[in-house]
Amino acid sequence: MSLDLARIAEVCGLLDELAGVATRLLPNEREMVAHLRAKYAEPGHTDADDVPVLRVILRNVTIRGGFDIDPARDPGRVIPVTPRR
Image (cartoon, rainbow, N blue to C red; front, side):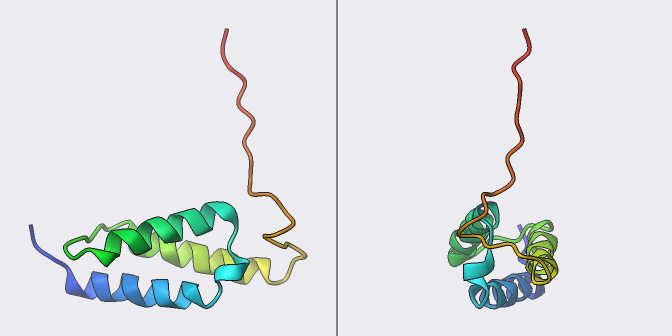
């Protein structure tokens, strides 16, 4: 297994950036950021999907900045699922 140190550094930088907007994260985003923060607290983790996921979360926070969305007031997205019979 080889480590991609550039990717690890980028993930850690994005996690630091997200720490600055933590109060503006929706519940599912907060959960994902916490998961990735715990994952990268231990050495040896590099997944190709982590950087794009964190970039999307940051982009979403920026997009929501122009709308009246309050993470404390507005629930996260809920997808109703009807069981098959």
